[in-house]
Amino acid sequence: MFQAFKEWFWLESFWLPPTIKWSDLDDHDGLIFVKPSHLYMTIPYAFLLVIIRYFFEKLIAIPLAKALGIQKPVQKIIPNAILEYYFKNSTGQPLQTDIYGLAKKCNLTERQVERWFRRRRNQEKPCRLKKFQEVCWRFAFYLMLSVVGIAFLYDKPWASDLWEVWNGYPRQPLLPSQYWYYMLEMSFYWSLIFSLGYDVKRKDYVAHVVHHLAALSLMSFSWCANYIRSGTLVMIVHDTADIWLESAKMFSYAGWKKTCNILFLIFTVVFFITRFIIFPFWILHCTLIMPLYYLEPFFSYIFLNLQLLLLQALHVYWGYLILKMIKKYIFQKDCKDVRSDNEEEEEEEDTDSNDEEEEEATKDKERNCLKNGFGTNKHLIPNGQHSH
Image 1 (spheres, rainbow, N blue to C red):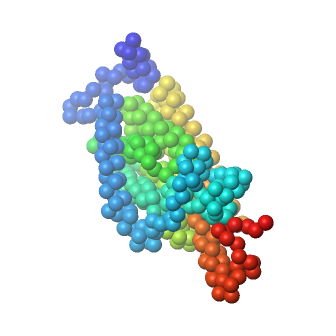
Image 2: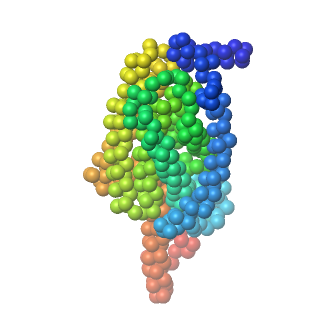
Image 3: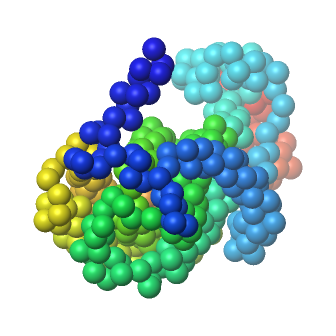
């Protein structure tokens, strides 16, 4: 049964133009052609990248974060067995009635219980340092991919003359630069999927998974059908914009708001140029219109362009989110990446700081009052409880 499915899946009519057979893409005369089996190597390469990432974050990202003033926060929390049991077995966000009952059990004020749960929730959340490490890794790799892509493509005829993308298709031999560009790109996305379990879980977690799988699907398909030339153009167009977004996030976590805003504006310009000008009017025109001058429409041609059109639809959606952020920044002077990071923990950290300041002020007031033999309300309230 598996053999029958395999033969059906690799039917030449699915993947290749009419009259072309898989035997036409056999290696000969020193020329090497793409083979689906080449893609197996992306998995071990991905695990290698996971290892490299670990050392990169320890040796480069963390020292860089500390140089920029990003420290791992120390959450001060007093151990409390009753509250800890409730946190682990019930919920980390108790209702007001529950807070009242817990305060009675623990002989604390309701405000102290609320503060304990807020700090305990913060212990479970990723800090800015961890977020910075991840973003720094993605920035470094996108930068490397862009440099590698430009180095591999700058002297290729199809980079300047898009008609060359289809010249001789599909009997186009595989170049070493194309092989390594694809291996790096696909291994990187596999490594991102493998690390989803311990990476910061963001608001768009599902969108990230779908994006990574869709990118791998598109790259795998273009490899198997030998759309390598157009595939490398699609990859370089996307990588060059992502650098600016990741660098903007790095400086956002470091608190360099002006630098972050400048980089985000650069990202916006590059994003709209690459996704709304270059991609639809050059890349899509190259894959959708130009092949018809050489070939009759066939299944993989249709399937490739359906995927690219869906990708363009995603560009429109992301463009809408970016414009939404720009509008928010212009009118509210508050530019945050609505696509991902949940800043709730940062808001709670600020609340904790305010609470601590209020608590210190209250203690000073209490000390001054106690010198005269009175509580803060001119009468003694034992154990911090309200009088009745």
